[in-house]
Image (cartoon, rainbow, N blue to C red; front, side, top):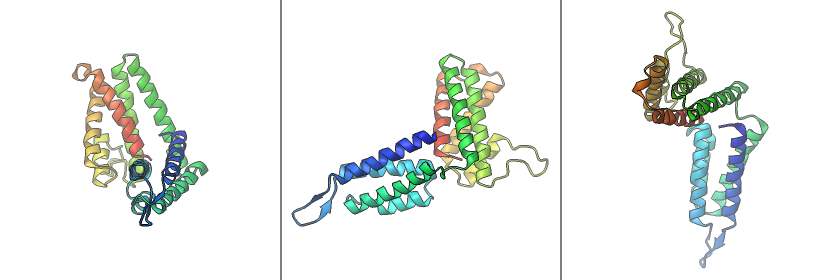
Length: 220
């Protein structure tokens, strides 16, 4: 996800919190609440954003999950405050390392090129390009997680399948993501070795979409 997309989304969520607060009402017995349907829509959308941007172990996600837990004005305001802190990080450019941001921009450009190739009917080139972006992203995730990207014995770069296995073993992402990555790498290898009849354009479309979403969920 590009930085501009993050800025737009965080502003949308803060506005959603403001809208929830406009539904504040007092019952006959004096209890104060907000519209529960609107509140939980706000809570779910915010948790999804925080998970995809920071991960479930980040303080932002955990704090929001604990504090914005009831459909009352106080919970809504606390959730809004956490989102405002996130907004300050994004607007101030503190969210990403320079390397991570540059990589994200480059990956996005290559994925856009792969999409163009797909649209023009070049499924094989699109599969290779999407797979190459995926492999490089795996290497960057390993560096982020302090996982060696080269074999100790010979100093040669580790194969993508091994990087995938080690990332999953270190809980960088879950087993479902690991299986998806394995399938995408297999498709990329078939394209790279000229086995064009062993996969379809529709499979490449799904691969491209999956790789794009995977990179967004597992930012550098």
